[in-house]
Length: 188
Image 1 (cartoon, rainbow, N blue to C red):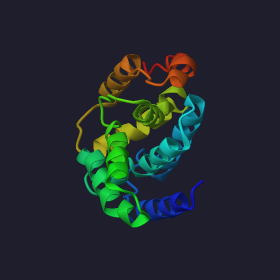
Image 2 (image 1 turned 45 degrees about the vertical axis):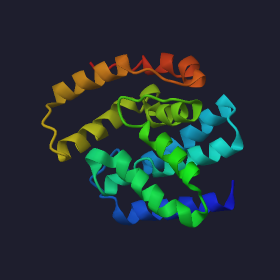
Image 3 (image 1 turned 30 degrees about the vertical axis):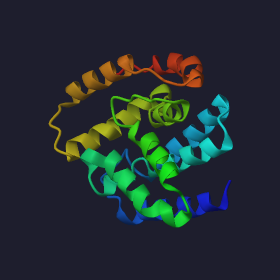
Image 4 (image 1 turned 30 degrees about the horizontal axis):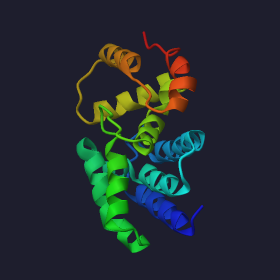
């Protein structure tokens, strides 16, 4: 791991600890760390280069940091934070642009244009293929309620069930090993 990554990691985790509201039961530090872990895992399985892995890991750390500023436009705000903070870590404009493109792929509907974007897209929704999927979905529902989305629990279950049935993983690894597991979780 590059020494600068540790600095960025500590900086963004500290930023989230100090500024992210505890009302976010899903989009919290645990989610950020989970996405970082899964992005790294998928990247190794997909055999991407160490340079691309580094940019991916930085994007994973930043991907939901914009929740502090504007939950409804958090991907854009996450990019703004990256553009503000990463130059001091000697990232050039091209690298920052690439990190922001990777972050933006987490906006639904996901439309990755390359393998690195596909990895973060899959890492962000990896939980769908785990036994924690129903529990995490309910945490996401709690956030929706807080952010003025007026849905009944029944409506949420219907939306979640439809989402999981229509969701497609993007990387070869997740298509091969996670799709079958994802289909086990039906909210009805």
